Image (cartoon, rainbow, N blue to C red):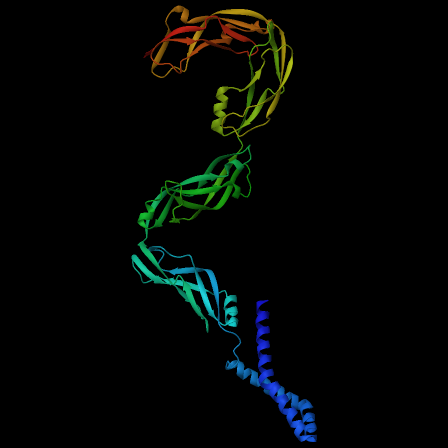
Length: 453
């Protein structure tokens, strides 16, 4: 739309000029001549109406217009200004040998000229702005910024026109490459990154010596969102960017060689079927005991890394606690299965637990040896007297369950994790293989002596 406005103004100026200096004077002349010479004026009017005469006059006027525009007899418009903002600056220097600080990324160029010339200049994509540092040595220099373009009748100004730069000798250093995995939480919950491999673990960083001293690490940023697929197996990731960081985690502007690497991401889906163990908490109503505990699922598949699965397997089961306090009748529980620490996912997240109760009875198990647990390394612990080494455990539950128990199913112990060398009174704790019954030690505390080996 701007070019249309420009040409409208141009033709309007031309029309005004010819109307004032040619059409109006000629019309007045013919009018006066006709009045003075009468019939002769009619002949002249006929002559002017002739096709050949009009053609000759048109050619003469066209030639006159061309001469006046070419010689700038007609001035179309006054000069104006146009600002080209954020023009990129190209620095010319030996990038293999030197590092330059203080280089501007962009400058503004102000062009001054006629509207037509400015419009043509603005449409051009060739705005070459350069700084020539090729003959300079390390040190501080004030350098002019040049606008390298044939601007014709246009004048220009560059802002800023000069800048102060510091040139350093480029040095290099070898660094060990580290790796960070990004968006790991975006991976499918049943998948794990088993391994990440790449061609080299050494890279070269280049830059000014004082800048290289800031580099604490160079990392490859492996973004799992960039994988074309996230399938079990080896997934290739190309052109992974390498970046240098200081000790605060900020990016350091140095050259890294190579700047990109290819990475193989090995994805697996390790899993293990783990038993579920229900642990009742609290005491059922007086005179009752738990006869059966039935689960909708006896096991659950745990998805986790191999080392996490090994730790879960050492425990032997996934515990689920249910509150049976004052339970008077059979009850069904909907329980959420807790996700083990470090695990990614479970095959099912909830189970149904059915608890049945019957009349209870008691039974004593004598001479249950007291174990010690969590004793600090380099120490030994022993009961002060014979009565501090064994206890009698009372088991409360349904008769059919109690009758299946053996003394070896019951474990009495003391937890010594918070105790140091000396003699201490320690609480006795009891647990058993069957969680449907309650275990109680008749002796609540024993005296233990802890000493160095």
